[in-house]
Length: 558
Image (cartoon, rainbow, N blue to C red; front, side, top):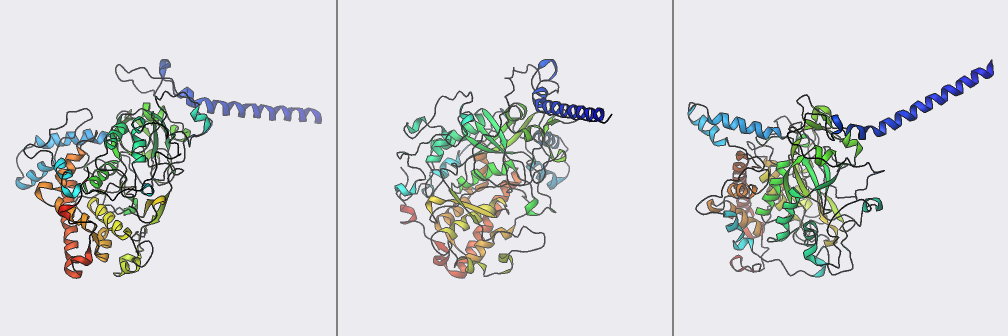
C-alpha cells in the first residue's frame, strides 16, 4: 500500500512538471502566434487599411539584446496624448474660423492664434515675400561668419587618418554581425570620407569648439536620414523616468526617439512641479533649431518623424518587454506603454491613429567606447524637492563661490554656463540638472546641450529664476551679446527666424505661435538683464571679448 502511494505521488510530480514545461513553451511561442492575424495575415487583429501592402515575415526573437552600450540621454515624464491631437487641433482651428465676427478684440486675438496644422506630405507654405529668406541673410551676417581658431590634431575628436577604424559594428555583439542585413557599405578609417554615412560624417566633424560647423552639408543630409532611413531595430532605453526608444537604421546610424505626448497648443498645468513636467518631442526639435540660430551649435541634430507603430516599432523590436505592452484601444488604435519609472502604464499609453505616431529623433553622439564624455553637476541645479530650495535660490552671492571652484575659476566654463542659461530661458526649460563635455578636450571646450524636452511648456509665463546665473554673475560673451541684440531687431526677429527654420521639419508646424512670440518677449528680458549688469559693473567687467579682432573685421569662414 505504501509503495503504491509513493508511485502515485511520483506520477503526480511528473505530470505537474510536464504541464509546467508545456505552459512555458506556449508562453515562449505566444509572440509568434500573436503576430499573425486572421487568415494568416501578419500584424494586428484590427480591421486592415485598404490595399495594405504585403508585410515581411515577423523577425525571430534573438537570445538576448545585441545593441551596443550607447549614450545616456536622460529624460522624464509623459502623458497619454497622441498624434491624433494634430488633426483635432486642425478641426478646432477650422471651426474657429467659421464662427461669427462677434467678440471684438478678443475674437480677433483668438483668430490670430488659430492656424491650420500641416499634415505630413501636405504642400509647405511658400517663404515670405519681399525680403525673403531672412534666415539665409542671418547666416551671411559677419557675426555668423567668424572663423574658429586653427584646429590642431588635439582639437579634433577623431583623427580620420589615424589607426582608429570607424567600424559602425565594432561595438556590437558577434551574433548581430551575422544577421542578414543588406547595407551597401561598411565605412572604415581607410576609406574615403565621401563614402561614410552621414551620421559618421557628423561624428568626425566634432571638434573642441562645436558639434558641427555652420555650413556642414552632412547635417542637412543627416536630418533627412533621420526621417527617411529604414528602421531595422528598436529597444527601450534604460534610465530616466519616461519611455524613450533607441532606433537603429539600415545604415547602422542610431537615434533616440521621444514620442508625442502633448499637443502643440497645450501648456504645462500650473500645478505641475518642474520635475514632473512632460517631455515634449516638439521641444527637442525646436531646441535644435534655436541652438543653431543662436550660433551655439551644441545640440545634436534632431528631426521630427511620423512613425508606424506596427511596422516600424512592434514588428522590428527585439525587446520582449516592449513588445508585450502593445494593445488595441477601444477606439481601435494601436497603443503601447513600455517600461519606465513613471507614466508607463495602460492609463498613460501612447496611442496612434490608428498606428501612426509623431516623435522626435535625436542623432546619437559617438559611442562612449570611442569618445568618453564627462558629466558635470550644474552649479545652479534645482533642488528637485517640493519644499526645499537650492543654495543659489537663497544666497545672492552664490556666484562668487562658484567662480572660486574649478573648472569655473578659469577658462571659459562660466561663460558656457551663461550661454546655456540664455538658451534655457528662451525655451522656458527649468530641467538642467547636469551637463556633459567631451573628456578628450578637458575643461577648455563647450557644453553639450542635451535633454531639452521640458522646454516650451508655457508661453504665458516667463520663469525668471532660470536667469539667476546671469543676474548673479553678470558675465556674458561679447559674441553672444551681439547676436542677441541682432535677433532683437525687426529684420532679424527671433520668432520669424524660428518659424522659417522650423518649417523645414517634416512634421511642421513645430511650435504654437504664442511660443514664438514668447521668445521675442524673453529675449528683451535677457537684454534688459545684461543692460542692468553693465550699468552696475561696467561694460568691460560684464561683456567678455571673445573676438581676436574688432567685430567689424572678424576673419570669416571661407
